[in-house]
Image 1 (spheres, one colour):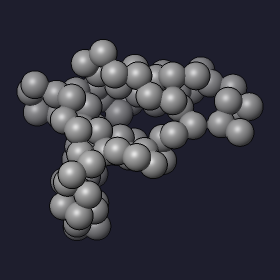
Image 2 (cartoon, rainbow, N blue to C red; image 1 turned 180 degrees about the vertical axis):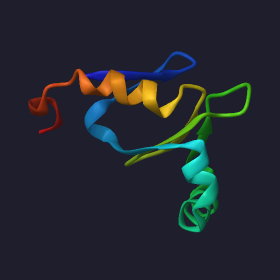
Image 3 (spheres, rainbow, N blue to C red; image 1 turned 135 degrees about the vertical axis):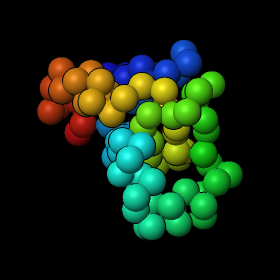
Length: 83
């Protein structure tokens, strides 16, 4: 299954490692360091300030969609889709 993460981008649910809200990402030194080290893989999908950070195996997305909304979208998935 694919999840819409903003700006006409859909990613496979099983490729998602984590979804972080902006506040958690900004308050964590580890996340800040991770984003700095992987800045060539960061894709900003938001024209306004982003609301969530989505980390996949290949890229890091800054999404205009709130992490709670993304969680609701992914909660409809069947566990078999992640295998």
